[in-house]
Image 1 (cartoon, helix red, strand yellow):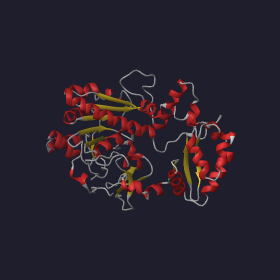
Image 2: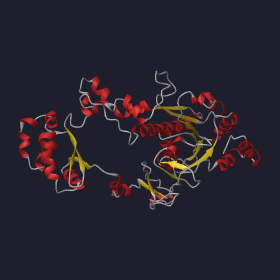
Image 3: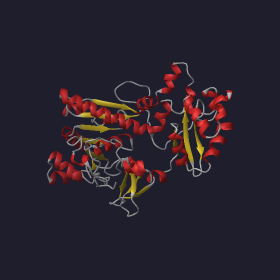
Image 4: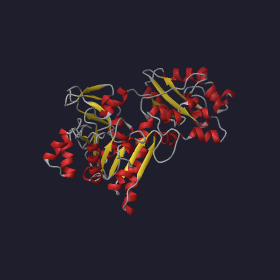
Length: 416
């Protein structure tokens, strides 16, 4: 689906569930911007507050392209800011801080993802905002949280740090080799974003009943513990925490087909029996080497891989996976970006949006809204904003600022 279009059908006649909800976001990079982009997909009016000279630090990421205003704008920004408006306010100035506090009562949600203590130093923390806007929901996303004392409170954190500290990496470490650190995908950011949206929706519902706002505090490490919960759980049960390592228990690995790899996950005995039959080795069912799930793992490389890859040699990775799925065995192709761009599921679910590039090159493909609802249509979605594109529009709309005051704030370098 192309930016600006609406998916047709019965759902197109309904409004968006968050229409009327206004979000003021002092945000950067990915965790919070992805959360507010989800809210924008659901109909919220998201106003992004950016430093006037540099903008959201995600604009400086790579790869980058030239925006409509001639500035370089990076991939992290491009994929997390569809449907938003941008205003340029220098929050390091007293005038900028005062302007932010004036804006807060006109928004249902104030959101920030700076390191704990930053907003307090600026006079823009929950205590300061709730004093002028007691109904406003204030959401914070940080590495280790704001509401409770923690020894990591002042640590900076990107997604791989939270993922490592929550125990995601160690189960996949082999011997004395370092654990694999995977930055692609930013699970820590996206999981934190999802919990942020859940928290905001719950707080809005609570406000409907009580009339008061509250502070929603999301720590990336907490989000990753919730996503990964098995390592501490298994450890407390006395089970081997190495369960998650591919091939350490049961059969879970990638196998080569004609055009790439497909992943097979077999965790139950009847599925192993079906796999043995499918690849032409029914004798495995009576082989003492495969009597236990640990045995499947121990002999994956020496016995199972050669047989499974011989079976798949004349099949595409999609064909091999489909054949196993027909037997009830969990399998799927290991997809490349090109595979996903052509995938019929992705197209049917509108999970890649075609966003025109300002430099005239071929359209970018940006991830769409994963939240599907029976009475809500897909789209239309606005493109990402240029830096401070909507400053005057938002300030006139929210505060009814006259031209002379806008000019004065611009002369004082409070706004851009």
